[in-house]
Image 1 (cartoon, rainbow, N blue to C red):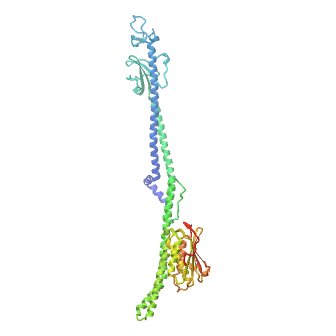
Image 2 (image 1 turned 180 degrees about the vertical axis):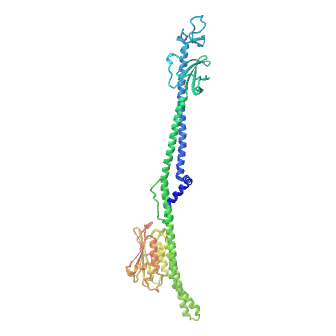
Image 3 (image 1 turned 120 degrees about the vertical axis):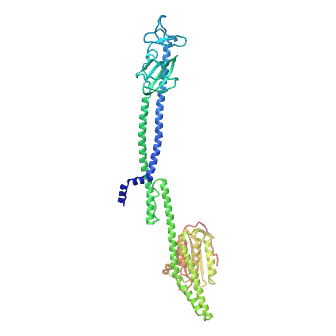
Length: 525
């Protein structure tokens, strides 16, 4: 089967890609990679912009400092010692009044206010001590009206323009961007410090390339790591899927998922799935019990009702076909019909009780005073007991536990009716209710002939009878008690009574919810 799927995938690569695109693992990994790409893009732009801005700010500070210092040196050269131009010094006046032109190679510079224009020799305004520039500053020029008066620098003059104002500015000259700063000296004289932006832009481009490479590697690493991590999470989901598929195939609701592995969310999901399976298992058990109870009810009813219904039918037919019967025979036939009718009703009630007990997993328990239930059952049996029969109850004031009240009542009534039916005529029945650790014991003793030990287990079965067939009863009494004892996590114990009859003890399991004991004496005679 897998080989067929592999051949189909190779024959249909587009279908394979489409399935991969629909895969939750691929989608989550791609989403994580996209998120990482956006984050790295934002971080990279911020880093490149920040570093480039920082370098430009540093370059501007250097240019401002260089231009300011050059302007100060130039003003000092123009002023001379004591603030007046000295002969031969930068800005000094001519030595002879008759001189008609400045020395060769010099230029006329406007001195400070109050003095006349004086010739300035080349190389004197910037000063011989300032012939070296910093690593970043490539060119310093003294300008007058756009003309270069003096310059320092190791690069060719690209013909930088003169800009108004002293703020740093970016200009293009010689086909390349430059950063310039200007400071005034005197009159129309200005000093200009300049540096090319090519190195700064080159470093920014290098940093940008590195950030792009790092971003691509980061996105790829994020994609791989996310794919692996999502795969680990989906493996846990795969266990859930396989468990669900196994339950669907085997219908085994006892299957459970390991809820101790995987992330917290997967463990919670596993616990929820286990809880759902447990509820389904319980519901399935109850459904099976109900179906089994229905089946048994139908089988038992069909088996046990056949004889009394046949007897009733025969009696009715006799009455219908022989209207000439005298009064005594007619009354006897009616008695037989009524007796079998009562037997059918009692049998149906017992079968219904058994059927309800078979499905009792769905019945709700509630706090029950066992002593009160036993008292009510004893009162009910007394009303129908033969004359002279006594039922005596020994019990504490109250004994409460979680139980199904109808089930406890039915079980106790069946024990009492069995004791009355199988005890001696006008006999005595003793009932004792007591707590024994986590259990509650309801003991019923009669004074009849008793049941031999080898026959007691058979009496627990349905329709088993320990008395002659003509004795009233359905043979379901102890079966009902046995069933109710099991439903209440207890048991039915059969032994010899002190008076020689049968002792039947109904044991209700689990600890009572509340227990109030006292010196219980006889309740009724």
